[in-house]
Length: 369
Image (cartoon, helix red, strand yellow):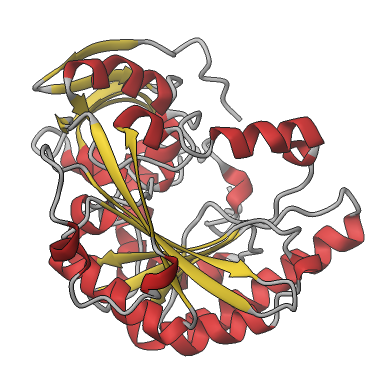
């Protein structure tokens, strides 16, 4: 485990991007960039994640269907390799190290500084809360929104009803400089129009929209409880049956009433080779953000459930988003990385020859030497 809290400066912000130390949070980045009319194109839902952390794992958000993951919006990196060398890298300078560090799960290098892309941002987010009664209608509309890119931000949530069934809601945001044409933005969508809500927030407030939820979890003590999350990428062709089946198996007691999120994504927007996703162009991030009581038997049961749900997704062409809690063997990792596994092995041999970085993930078989 690496404490990067002393590397927390936002060193530069401008049209050529933001130069940020790895321990800085995304909140610090937007606090520095939004007053200048700039923002990273893809932002996580929770702003107090560190830049180095999300760039090591991937970094998803509601704009990823348009702009890719956060790792797809990095221009340059400074890293320390497992061999103890401070190296600068980019898509044209040491690209093999650049690709190994972004989404590489910390296996080959420790990110210490990044230059991330910034884009012009409007001052206001117009928010559309769109209700749906079933998965199939929801996924049809999410597919449409992923491909036509009419909204800047799209995410969906499964909402548990008192009787145990689920309803669904889409949060879509437009950052248009002028008031957008609502009818055009909503044309062709099959949501329940009687329950739709339209609101506006300053862009910075929209990025910080879950802060009150986190504050409530901290106040209740839930923030310090175990969080055995399930995070999967589900191919579009299997998403309807998979999500329906998974929700059927997840009583409230198995999630702690944590949110269940669904994001539409496109393979062609993702470019880092070690960030593994399904082979289909359209796929969905399915997040079950469990909160469990601090009871080992309960946590172990939920992790076992994660493994079972993962295996079902894997057998349908799904992949793991490597921020959750799923037991993995070296064979599972080899299967996860697929054709990129050889590239990872070569990068490991070259940049971390003594295998000192993040051995606990168990990606590689132990060596006799």
